[in-house]
Amino acid sequence: MDNERREIAGGWVAITGSKISAVGASGSEPAAREVIDARGCLVTPGLINTHHHLYQNLTRAYPPMTTAPLFGWLQSLYPLWSTLDEESAHVSAWVGLAELALSGCTTSTDHLYVHPAGAGDLLTAEIEAAQDLGIRFHPTRGSMSLSVKDGGLPPDNVVQDHDVILAESEAAVKRHHDREHGAMVRIALAPCSPFSVTKKLMIESAELAEKLDVRLHTHFAENSEDDDYSVATFGCRPTEYLEEVGWCTDRTWVAHCVMPNDDEVARLGKAGIGAAHCPSSNLILASGISPVVALRRAGVHVGLGVDGSSSADSASLWLEARQAMLLAKLRDGASAGSARMALEIATRGGAGCLGRLGEIGELSVGAVGDVAVWSLQGPRFAGAIADPIEAWLRCGPVSAAHVVVNGKSVVRHGELVSPRVDEMLRRHDTLARRMQNFGSR
Ligand SMILES: [Zn+2]
Image (cartoon, rainbow, N blue to C red; front, side, top):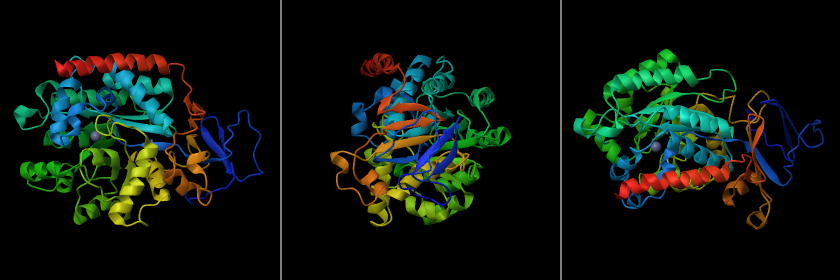
């Protein structure tokens, strides 16, 4: 996935410290202190997750979501999520990022938009989880400011005051945002969605992001309800609203982007915006199929997102890459959705969304040492000898055999390296029961 998209049969990747120091063909391997044997494997850049709500794994596969589309589904879950605190934010992030790492993810974002009164510093709690696991992390300081009484969707107890949101956003950037090449933590600002924040918060978040030089993220044009809300409330299409509030820039990446018409696709592309494609979530909530092929052609950086574990439930980036390939075939024809296109979205497309092209999402000298190794052996891959990249997504399902982040192993032989997995899963079970029991009261 370098600029020439070279594919090196029998090749190797050398990492020195935290960066890729060389790549090459079989026979020219340098001496190394530690060697990961990737014979019979496909080696790709670590995959990049550009949209998630990690805390939602506490309400994974929760019953009401199976019947309601987006708005009703959200309204049934807000009361449960209002019980989120530092411990549950930390443990859910740890487990969610561990799950992602097993699917070859080395960089993940998170859209944490529920900040109940008195819940504490949830953003720091999840950053500490990523640091403990060794995952590159782009949490966003999410926010909701428009509750039911003001014409929004969420209840009063999960929204925050406008000034508090901006002050806490600025404080989070000052405390955690690392601007260095190879940074392990970066913060973005992320008002939740048009139907849960005021127009003023959209405008002032964009101004603050400009001032602090950080990125912007929000939900966008997710389904027909979202589209109808825009027309009814703002009197315009979602893209016009984005332009009106100063968000249609290359500082922004949006989640979903299912509904744009041809004109909107062109305008989004011209702006150099990013879009997190969340195929499983869009299928489960019956939202629709994002026009990914057209968006890419127009110049949009299309990345891949697993979305929250209450809507997509499974958080495997490999699975999302496969879904992206299949949906592109269904929407735009069999040849439109190839495994190479899906790999591009899962790596370089994600780097474009996060403003880190050339730094993450590729195997090239000077890029970060983030690598996923996929075994292409066993019954699932028998006979798949013609094209290892097509085989990687068309056969399977697979998890990553080895995952290296910033030059350090996070997954070895299909298992997490951390000794804390069992302990964290036990704590997660207790916290998930506590949250779901609250809902059944
Ligand atoms: Zn989402």
